[in-house]
Image 1 (cartoon, helix red, strand yellow):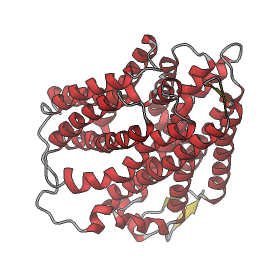
Image 2 (cartoon, rainbow, N blue to C red; image 1 turned 45 degrees about the horizontal axis):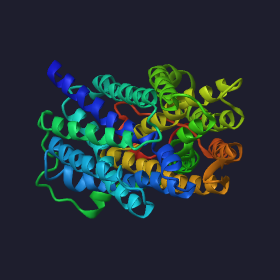
Image 3 (cartoon, rainbow, N blue to C red; image 1 turned 30 degrees about the horizontal axis):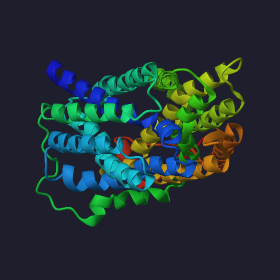
Length: 420
C-alpha cells in the first residue's frame, strides 16, 4: 500500500466517524431536553439505526457488490445523508422526525461496511494494515466528542448540522478515493446468496448458536447506554459530558491493543464473559455514582467501554471468523451483525425508551428521571445473559489433521473437539 493510499484511507475513516460521532452520542439529550420527546420516542429514534442495520447488508449485497464502484456509492449515500440530516435538524415533531431519521440511517449504515470493504480491497495485507487505518476513526470520534462538549451544544440541533456539513465534505471526498470496482459485477445472485442464508448452517454448532443468541440478548441492555448515557450525564450536571464520554473510546483503543495478550492467556470464553460482566458493572456504577464525591463511578462506567466493546464484540467477530468456513465467512459476520446491531439493538432501544418513560416524573414541563431504577434493568439483564452464556457456551478447539487447514476442519464439523 502506497503512502498516498494510506493517507486517502485514513482521511476516509476520519470523516466517516466524524459524521457518525457528531450526531449519535448527543441525540438523546437534544430530543429529551430541547424537543421534549418522551422516553419511548427517544428509544424509537435510536431504533432507526437498528432497523437500518437489518436492511443495509442486503443493500450492500445487491447494489455495491454488483453494479457501481464502492467509492461512488459511498459518495452518493453521504451526499443524500447530508440533506436528510439538515432536514432532520429543522424538525420538531416526532411524527415526521422518526421517518426522516430512518431514511438517514438507511443511507448511513451501509457506509460503515463499505468503508471497511474499500479499505480491504486496496490493501496488500489487511490483517496488518487495517488496524492502523481503522484507529483513525476512533480518534476522530474522540475529537468530535471533545468539540461538541467544549462548545456546550449537546442540547442543541448544532451537532446534527455539524454532521450534515461533515457529510457533504465526506461525500465530495469519496470521489477522490482509489477506484474500487464492484467485486461481483455481471455475476448472477440468488436470493439465498443475497440474504446469506448459507451461514445459517453454523447454527447447528451449539457454541455458535449460543454465541448468536447471547450476542442478540446482550445488545438489549447495551442499548440503554447508547440511547440515554449522554442524557443521564447531562441531567446529573456533569460538565462537558460529550467530551467525558470520549474516555470510552480511549479505553477502546487501549484494550484493542492488549487483546492479543489476553487471547493467549484466557481464550474466547473468558474474554466473552468478562465483556458481558463489564456491561453489568457499568450500569451498577451508574446506579450509585453522582457528580460530586462519587463522580469516579461515572467515569469508571464510561471507561469500561473498552472492555464492554472489545472483549465481547471484537472477540465475537474473531471467533465467528475462525469457526466459519471460508465460503460463508462474510455471510456469518453479516448474520452476527443482523443479530446485534439489528434485532438486539432494536429491541433494546424500544425497551429502554419504555423503561425511561415509566421512570420519569413530569412536573412543570420538566422531566425528573429516576436513574437508579432505570439503570437497574439493564444491569440485571446483563447478569442474566452472562449466567446463561457461562452455563451453555463451550469453547472448542479443533484437532487438525496433518495438512488440514482451519477451514477444512471447520467444514467437517466438530467430530474431534476439546471442551474448555
